[in-house]
Length: 390
Image 1 (cartoon, rainbow, N blue to C red):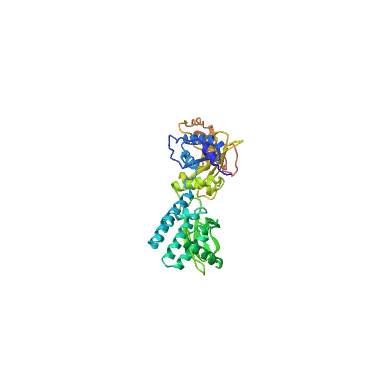
Image 2: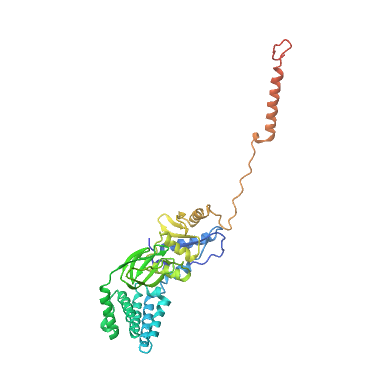
């Protein structure tokens, strides 16, 4: 099951419940536009009960429906502008030109290390190579040129269009790379399973073992629900020790941006507990209910982020019936709707005669009297003969 942006656009905004319940918070998320009315009705029904606290899903759904706000081409464009400014510094101060090209890499490297963003790193590395060559450091210039060549994965750089000094460095870097061996490199992250992008190419999911040529490389590590990490590292002839990435949990707008990106790509799987956990984190709730419409009525799959197993599925034809099942799955029992009078007390129970005290008192007297009579009548006469009834 995939969530499509169209479903979110058509989904109506839901007013926040007027009464806040004290119970655990739950986010109800319609799987498609057909489930949106049922989801809205369920929110209102749960809000009228004194159990779970449904949050208003409207703001989150509207934000996700807007799509991603981060355009990687903007970072590419900004890096190109910085490269042009730094190139103009080379004749007067090559050192200042080198420092200027470091700015974008310090400020938004994670955005430049994407499959699209690496196009912005190429001009920065070329200008840095030119500046280092101007400063007399040919070795460092060659390393930067090799870095730029390695990032030109789409062969978009036309050497003939480069300035004469850059063209010579570029051609030398091409020849140098062709004869270099490849060495093993390992990329790790905590948690594991993050997607690793090396030099603009998807390398797999961490931990990743790959082979790279000696020189500079850039890696980005990303996983839904966490902030992306990126770094530029250098590989020697004996390999490289790349420190593991400790990914930090993503919250707020960055998390909503991730969710919007997953929705736009059709990758938000609503039957995947890890994916649904993103919605729970965005809404800061304990439970998430994915609402679907079926021929049999409404079905809600309940997830509890952080738990290995989901509580279960609540299905029914009416919102009240489904709400009661949701409460049973999450709270252990259904909750009486707010304002509904309690059920009448059962009629008074009439004690049966054998449950009265006097019945057992009389029965006890009969038993004791009978036993006493038997004992008295059983006593022998003086001649030793027992005569009953005498």
